[in-house]
Image 1 (spheres, rainbow, N blue to C red):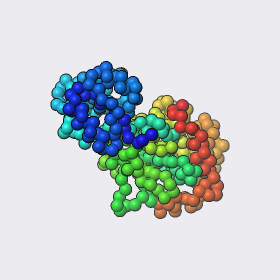
Image 2 (cartoon, rainbow, N blue to C red; image 1 turned 135 degrees about the vertical axis):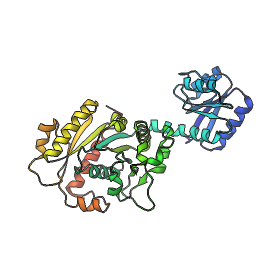
Image 3 (cartoon, helix red, strand yellow; image 1 turned 120 degrees about the vertical axis):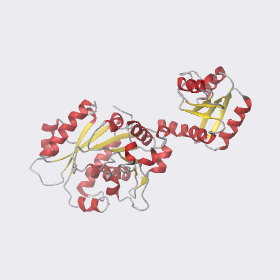
Image 4 (cartoon, rainbow, N blue to C red; image 1 turned 45 degrees about the horizontal axis):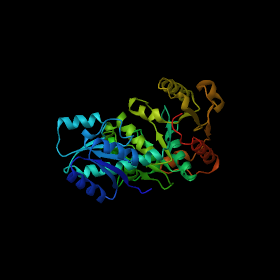
Length: 363
């Protein structure tokens, strides 16, 4: 299938319809497959051709008649009536012709990216450590590398702007500074996988990363923006791997709602067990606890053992990362460990576990 958005026009004035059609076709990213001059012609064209979107005067459209195609409302003059009709029809955007034709072209092309996202739905996996130092960033970054090594297209998304550890752990360049999620926030309501591809930073290990913004621009990263970023990320990879913050506040609730698995990282010490227990209680209240799996990070010698996890947390660990003295120096220098030895084997087994989810959506 050609990678352009298929559009049906619904415009009463023949000369305006001709102008819009020629403009959209010239963009190279959109193809007008039919035009309609009244509501009945429009409904029939949508039924037969199943376009990605409809560009139409809102007065020609009734909600629920477009069979799931996106509606981009178009008028030559702005009026309260036209805006109200666009809202009632469920329009994704409202554009004035010809003043806003460039914005219309971009929005129309974006509907194809959204259609591709629906066709390619990533497995969405979260990594969460309720306490600093348990190895959340280590697991997220190295699991991304393990997935890439196995040939799985992975996009690592850092949703922890308070610390932003992923950029440091990956050795992202300081000059010029890489783009971050903050670059996606303007126009987040129309965010597409193609836009995510532009902003994501590619690591030499073969995966991509959406890096966390600095704290000040991160103030614009609310629940709606998180939902948009995660949704677009899910259309841009085989696995969207979410590096979650320590505090599971309202801002990341949209991410928790869609994860298929949430790896809870614990070390073998009492404080980490207590923090994990509290996190599980919180996740239970959010209706996510049934998707949680525990990963033990044996970061240091300890009296507790992986066998102590199940009595305290109610579930046995699905993976145990062995103690490795190379971890701290590697992270200090922004390097990932080679995926060999016991640590590498454990990470590759966990990657296979993620791949086995099958991308079938939320359980």
